[in-house]
Length: 88
Ligand SMILES: N[C@@H](CCC(=O)N[C@@H](CS)C(=O)NCC(=O)O)C(=O)O
Image (cartoon, rainbow, N blue to C red):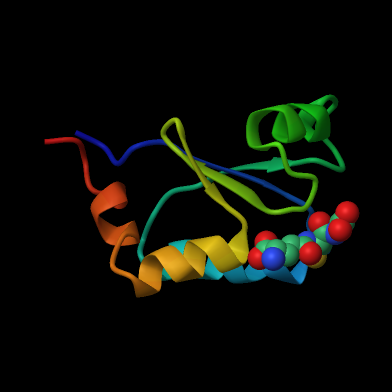
């Protein structure tokens, strides 16, 4: 089975978004990117789902990971790789 869906709300100009994208790329993970500057309603959707206003906001499945720093913290603590595996 495939990895859980990963959704990242982002802006193309945002360096934190670039860093988060690079970490997922290094892990070979497929990410659906939602550009909040381009997709109508995406910023409001991101804020409603995350209760945050900064980009990026990252979801793996239904789980809200947070932003770029949260993603890297999760990776450093060993919590990210298990989330990228297909459900058992
Ligand atoms: N600590 C956050 C920082 C994110 C951040 O500051 N993003 C900027 C864009 S690079 C932002 O959304 N600024 C808009 C705002 O602060 O309202 C993370 O790691 O994701």
